[in-house]
Image 1: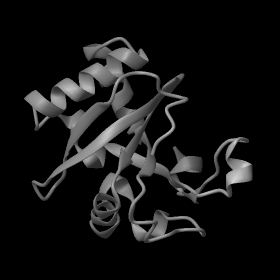
Image 2: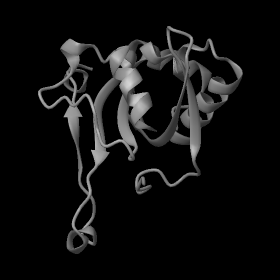
Image 3: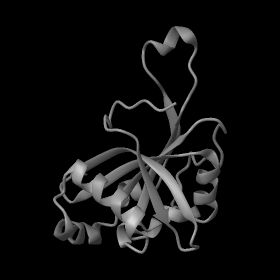
Image 4: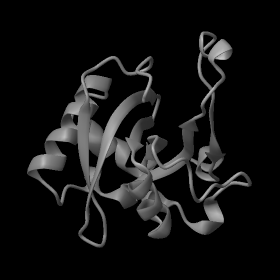
Length: 159
């Protein structure tokens, strides 16, 4: 179950285009814009995550995965992946839309349904920054919040 603290909008499905022609579904659960950095956070199921890691999608090459890399997570829980748009493409995105959270999410979801060849819904246009999954807490700690574990990638520092 996902906590929707950072993304209060309705569920937004994004269909990704990968180089193998497979349709990957994810849910957008967050979006941040910081200067020329455009990040989105997606949620995927465990099987989709394994496909992403196996096929090195979102530029998640073996050499970019951090020390705490985990190939597998708990099967019945969603996995969050924070992505950053290729910095060279931010100016191109600015030509198409205003850099605003709602605009970006709307644009991406529309293109993922109508224009499958659009560069902004291609998995190689985005870089995986970190991968997390919420951990189960004892009942007496659940009232304090949640804990997520995972790993950061090299792209978090380099982009």
